[in-house]
Amino acid sequence: MDVRLSPRWCERSWPLTLQERRRAPALLREVPSGRVRRTLAHKDTPMQQALMRKLESFEPLSDQARWALNRLVLKVRYVGARQDLIQEGDKPENVLLILDGFAYRYKVLPDGQRQIMALLVPGDFCDLNVFILDEMDHAIGTISACQVVDIPRQAIDEIARDHADIARAFWWCSLVDGAVLREWLVNIGGRLPPQRIAHLICELLMRLEAVGCVTDNGYAFPLTQTQIADMMGLSDVHVNRTLRDLRAQGLIHLKRRVLTILDVERLRAFCDFTPNYLHLRSTRWDDRRDLSWPGQAEES
Image 1 (spheres, one colour):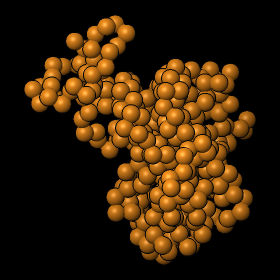
Image 2: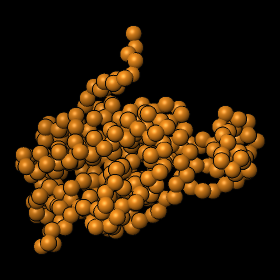
Image 3: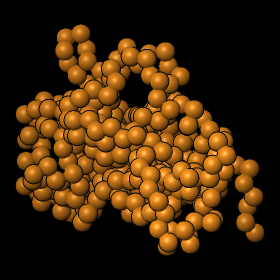
Image 4: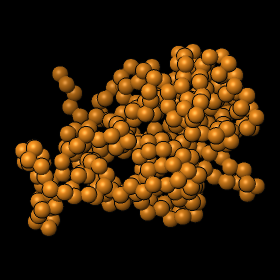
């Protein structure tokens, strides 16, 4: 009998306990080999829940969809900080999912200047449809040490085909990636440097809170001043001065790579942050958005 605990994102197998056997009947399914595989629901850690929470921030998932996601047995690879996950010019084959840590998209100009176009946090895909491309037109690298899953294209296609709510959540992910990129363009072209950085801090608060990575308005902040400068089109000196000013105003506290927002409402007002471009189902600053979907029956 093949017994596998797939919610732990690993391939360990061991015998069922008596308590697990009593819970297992509803969880049985036949596999092509004719053997019966039991996949048991165990309490996941916050890191293991990152993908589920990310998808459900866009689209409510049915029990069947949640079970299908938990049933995926995927191998996690641990990647150190400041390493490339994939380079410009490489042929993409799998979809990358960040389970833990921070990563980023970037391009390097011929003169060596780097531009960072996106931040990737726990629960983020590094582009769901990237395998369609013949080659990468940008690179993806880690900022901090990361836990990364390589999801085969077939697995993405099959789970989206079999579960409409997962497919819709995947669409939301892709659409929001584009919306965030547009907001970053507005940020660089239309806001003053202090507001640019404050806006980034507010965005990270919302995105990380959606996947359970915020405690008391604080979160891991492994970004260096040079990386922030490469995101915001600023110099290292300007970033240093802006962070110092935000601290002096009592808006943030930054120590040992943990950033805490001391006054969330003041910081939001300072940069005119509006989270609508993140399209989260429920946010601290926004009413729950309309969950209706074309083709779904309206409740009377």
